[in-house]
Image (cartoon, rainbow, N blue to C red):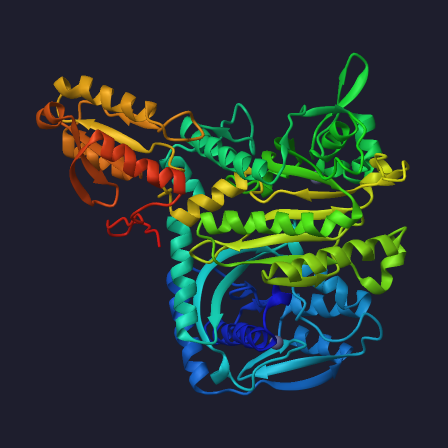
Length: 627
Ligand SMILES: [Zn+2]
Ligand SMILES: [Zn+2]
């Protein structure tokens, strides 16, 4: 994370952490300091204090920080031999700094960064640590490698936001420090934008909205990390699959269905075993043979490819499946729909010739862009993971194949015209990988989709085609999943739309509200007419419900609005007589009485184009609004 921050912002945030520590030292002279690295939005500092801080205390600290900021205290650097440094920190009762210095002396800087999560704590290389740098800010002296801004007047705009417990050096048997989080930005506007974003993220939290809108549930009897998709959440999945099927068919994909368990030999062949075993669940036996829950769909799809012989004229073969997979996650890491133990991927594998690979990859990128346009995702980029190219031959058998695959991907990315970044040092051994990074309307970044160009599967699975020359040739495999998994993508969509899904996607598209019991029959008739109307949806017809509860009309309307249902169709005597409905939108807009055919035409328009005529805006104060 920290490595992607601009260097000047990095120095400012890091300096701001010093400023906070200096303020805390003024207020709590007995404070002992751990580490305080910069973060993607500011910084934190782990501090040992005699008593737990309350949120109110943060204001006091902030005030002191402002006071010290005004003084424009310089960040003065000095060097000390390591033994003197240890003595100095011991004298000042800074036990944690003493520990860090000893760790530095005995094991070098890398160990410190690894154990504390702070790579700014100390200077120098692994080897030959004999002196360390200190920075003084007013009365506060910190062990630090820098860099800093010149003085405390340049620490930017900050806000302390939270306190949490943090174990020293991540060790749960060791002392627990208080971690104080701060935001820090060059300008007030950026700071305020970040605070707005955090507030919106809370209002739009998919776990909160997912519960309110009855999208999914966890049951302790089923198990953590194994979501149960409720009827309304399942409607979302149905629509996404309906969309994917159509877009994929258009691009020449064929759908397949494969089992979720497999004999262990398949995973030895695919090299998931033993290399990926940590992420897989323990095997089980059926009639004396060992089986696994599948962590990936690829080996199954390769078996489908192998079901028949392919000539050069058959390629590309594009096999798609919304495939359920299971991967191990530690219980502590599980979170809502974003970190789960079982999920369903928008998966596909494209088997092609070398000369087709670039065009196929480009097509996959264009498919992403079509989806993003549809969902109003404006901010996205591709992230190409590269290995350390100088050392490529050390961990790849055939570096020239790797480089050939890389060339294809680079060309396709450039030709696409979409923004991309290259990141070194984290590529897969079987080929280059491109992740699509997308941002929700409030700016949260999600990694949804991973794409790979794989030249190794042809060896491990003997994936070949018969060329014009009558001989066998290797195929290239593209792995792709533009809509990621249902779980993560729906979590994204909930935040992105704040639960106000566009009509085509809304789990319930219209709620019919009979004014009195005697209007229930007509309400039911309206529902059936809408369902039977010629509107293509993923659920066989428009999703319409009738509110037959005993609530009063106003309350029924309010409930439908809270459920974020796009259309509310009120029916009473007049409507029954004139074969109309009184149309309200969830944002409060009153469209008045409309003939049923007109409502159908309007909804059809929105569903077919997958675009709402009027963007939903919820006017209720304090509610999350869609932009
Ligand atoms: Zn520093
Ligand atoms: Zn795959």
